[in-house]
Each structure stands twice: as structure tokens, then as C-alpha cells.
Length: 168
Length: 380
Image (cartoon, rainbow over all chains, first blue to last red):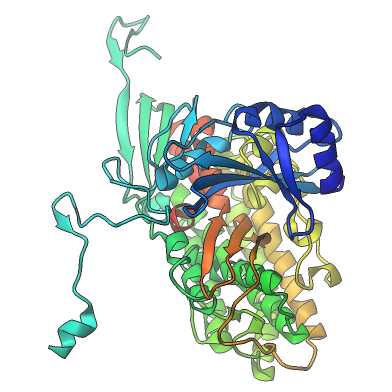
């Protein structure tokens, strides 16, 4: 199915909850309301003509200028060989969205990584802990305004540039 | 399982043990830890603890130029650096609509498939070693050494190649090197049979693998297993054939899938056997490429100040550990706005918790080895 057809189908089913379809890009995408993400994902997976049984990738992108964090879902269907990209805009101050763990189990780990590096809270997630960084790390490194902490557990993270040292 | 259960026959109290496997453990291939809860030898829960090798490669991508990021992608998976090179370069080319020269494409495929051989050799070799067969590991490493020498001849590096560049490849493959690659392939084909006699057909090896840690097709899709792990579960899916890129559509090769001919479909043996057969397929691909290698420049003209148009793309390549995805966003500047690397090992790790329930502690090692997870690729 062509991406535009997929979008048309969803628009019919979930009027007002999907918007901003972009079809003239490499991977066509559209926006989804944060509240409707679960029902739309479940429909995308279970509908016989769509059958997106694969969550290829789930990640986030920080857009400080627009004051939003975007969670991006890359879906693929082995059965029909089509793909679609979903984007959900969340506020930067309190990014919260329901977990897709119940639909694709792999989302468990993808969401843990997004929580760790972007600070997005996934409601209903079974194991929302930091995955890459230590539990007591401060801040979310993949946000654009992240400032590295100066020391961690009493160990300085700052180093004088090597070149300066040699010049002295 | 109860915290303290009473053994029915003896009346003794038993207690679950919590053991830390790793971070430094010979079978974890990198720095990787499991917190294992066991009842005697039987695992009730194995919680993976990753992140020891997190080098923030995605964040670095936002700070360096497009050309400058290629060497960093090498470090995502050091056993298969060529594929990360290719993935990122393909994404950059797609965004900027940069053409790749035809010779460049063939050089890419030759280098990638040689890299796949090296990576699979490490995978099956160390797998044998984890289970207790030391000799096959040494044999596999010996062959890999020759591939490393060939790689050094092609691009000057043995592990982190930085060979594939935006627009083509860094250096042309010389005719002498082509001869040596073809000599190596002639030598290597019988080695695979030798390897099969040495390890694959070994009774102990088969009994350790067959029927252990079975991945059903549904689980493979739910947990998004990719590459040999997915094909081991009987799903015939290979990015090279199904979402073709580069010159793969012109080449002839088989896609091995698990059949369950020894144990159950989707068990550890199937995943191992897919890798062994992929060794032969990769040899086939390299041979065809050497024959078809066209004349011409190896790299097209690319601006030093590389600035792709505003946009985003998602590119998939079939790495030895499966579908490697690059989600790259450009804001039109000299630096990528966001680089996301989706790797096969990461999703393979997510299934370990489920598969480990109820298996023996020694079989956890088989499970990790058969999924071929690579710690740097998990953490990035």
C-alpha cells in the first residue's frame, strides 16, 4: 500500500487524530496525537491490509526552537513490504506518552533508551530505568541544550586540552 | 519461584541465588553484564545490564561534519565496521542526491562481504570457544587474519576501516589485490567444509545447541530480531534482497534460513547454521563482484564542504548482525542535526530476558553466543 493510501485509511478511521502527511520526502511520515498513539499503533499492526508487524526503530529528536520533542516510530510490514513513519510531538517540559510495549515488545528497550537519553516518560512501561548511563546521571545527553556535568562520583569529567598542555 | 521453597523430598530450605555474569566474562564478547537469578542450575531470570561501552556515538554525530563522522561509525560495531560506513554514507548520499560511481559500488560490496566473512568467522569461532571447543576458534581466527591482511591492502586498516566515503570508496582496489582476494576465496571454500567437520558435525556441539533457546517466528517479529537471528527462526528476510541497495540486485546469492533439521526450528543450532552458510554465500558474492568489477573512478566528485538539503532519511543495510538502520536528519548545515543508529544486537539483547527463563546457566552462554550480540554495537 502506498503511504498516501495508508494515511487516507487512518484519516477515515481516526478523524482529527492524524495530520500533516508529508508524501514527497524519502520516507513519508505523518503526525499522530499523543493521546491516540496506542489505538493507532494497534490498528496499524492488526489491520489485515496494513499489518505493520515490525517496529523497525523508535527514537526521538529534540527541537528546542519549536519547543518540542518528537518521538519517531519507523514501522515496516514484511507481509506487504510497505513502511510508514509516525511522529508524535511532545512538550519539552513534560514529555509523556503511553508505552507501545504492549503492541511491539521490542519497544520496551527502545523506550528505555529514549527515556535515558531524552527524558521522555513512557506511561505504563514495565521497566523504565536508565539503560546506557548510570542511574544517578544528571540530565539527558541527546537533548540539544544538554550541559555535561562537571564531575561524576567525585571524578572530574573535564580535561585540559592536550595541545595546550604541550604548548606550555 | 518462591524465595524460600521447601524441597519436598529432603525438607531442606532452598533459596534463589543471584549471580552476576560479567562485565568481564569470556563469553560476553565485550563488556556486558547479566544479573542472573537461579534456582540451582536453572535460571529464573537473567536481566541484561548494558551501557558499559556507551561512547555516545549518536551525540558525536551532531558535533562533527558529515565527512568527519564516517570514522566514528566504524566504532559502532568494530567487527563489522564496513557496514556502518556504508549505512551512514548511503544516508548522506540519499539526502544530498550524490551519485556513487559504479566501480565504487562494486568495491563497497567486495569490502563489505569480506568484512562479513571476518565477522561471521569471529562469531562462529568464539561460539565454539564459549562452549568449550578451543581449536575451531584458532582455525577461524587464522582465516580472519588473512582477511585482515587483505583489508589492510585495500584500505590500510585492519579493523576500523574508514574505507567507504560519501560518493564512493576511499581507495581503488588494485588488480594485484583482486588476484589475492580470489586466491584467498579458492583457499577458503574447503576451509568451510573443514570447519563443518571440526565443529558443526561434532556430537557434543550439536547436543549443546539443538533445541536450546528456541525463538518462534512470532517472537522474532515482536522483538524485531534481524539478520541471521531472524532467518534462523525461518523467516526469509534479507535487506540485500528484499529492500535492495547498492548492486546487490545484479548479484546471485541464496538466502539461507533455518530449517530445524537437527533440533527445533529457531533453536541455537539454526542460527549458527545460517551463519555458516552465509560464509559460502558471501564468497559467491565476492567472486561475482571481482568478475564484474567495471573500470572507472572509485569515488565521484563530492564537495569538501558537504551540505545536504534539509530533510531526513532512514537507510537500512544488511550487516552481519542484521538490519542496521541509520536515521539521519539534516538541517542544511555542515553538521548532521541528528544521527540515530539502530543496530541488530540491541534488539537481540531485548529478547534474552524472555529466552533465558527456565534454561540452564550453561545454556545462557549458548544463547548469548547464538544471538551473536556484540557489546559495542549494543551500547554505541
